[in-house]
Amino acid sequence: MPKEEQRRLSKLEITPYIVYWIAKVQDLQHEMSLLVLNGQLGKAPVKSPRNVLDIGTGTGIWALQFAKHNPSSQITGSDLSTIQRQHNEPNCSFIQHDAETDDWAFSQKFDYVHLRYIVTCFNDTKSVIQKAFDHMEPGGWIEFYDTTTELIRIDDTLTGTAVERWARLVDEGGKKIGRDFAKSLKYPVWCREVGFTDVTEEYFPLPSNPWTKDAKFKEIGRYSMNNQLGLVDSLSRFLRIAGLSEDEIEKLEAQTKQDIQNPDIHYCMALHISYARKPFIGEQTV
View 1 (tube, helix red, strand yellow):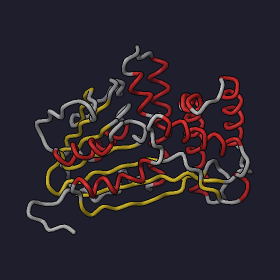
View 2 (spheres, rainbow, N blue to C red):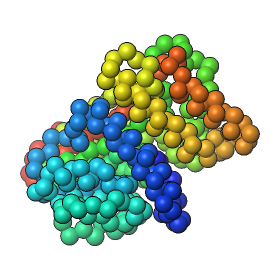
View 3 (cartoon, rainbow, N blue to C red):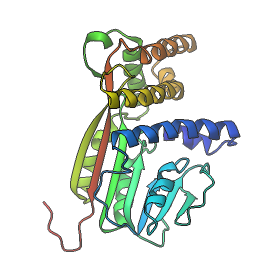
């Protein structure tokens, strides 16, 4: 679920249905990420971190699993909304916090800062990266996971489809109000600019649905398909901004959902993973 939607939800009554819907979407995203990473919770070479911050933690599923697998670490999950799961992990806690606009009044510095699916979250993502850098221990790691609305064509089956038009119009609507859905491509650049080193970028293809023959990617495709269906429902406002009427939006979204589930239409989305290290004191960096 886009964090922009969670910003609005944080100002509304959080009903049991809303919590259930958010949990369902985030659980799908989490399981998909585990498949991509072969069961790992991250790619950065983090070793025995004492303090970990999970920004935009949502239901807290990543933070809780990291806490379970790292009992000597103290994990803090921050989010705009208090929708986290009830839990009994003694080394995990949650706070209501806007990483962009609130003061970072943490008493500790962090060895690992984790952010996932935050592309629509912040107006100034670079400022959040700067704050993370300022509140990290030397040698600490920051890590991002995000996708874009770009559809990677595998063959000609994507050409002229509703989902191709939907992605283009969502992107156009976002640009009209300064929302860059390709922002994740800039995370490594911003990390270097604020002072991080050992900046690493990795890309993983997410099949649109189970059209591929490979067993692992077929399973990833199932999760990806359901994640995309949720995105269609949550990004309607960008179609309005792009100039479509309500009737046009309803028709396009219905056709787009059909395309997403059509195994004869072949395309991928890219999962962008970026991670970087804060230099040690006195370390010479290039």
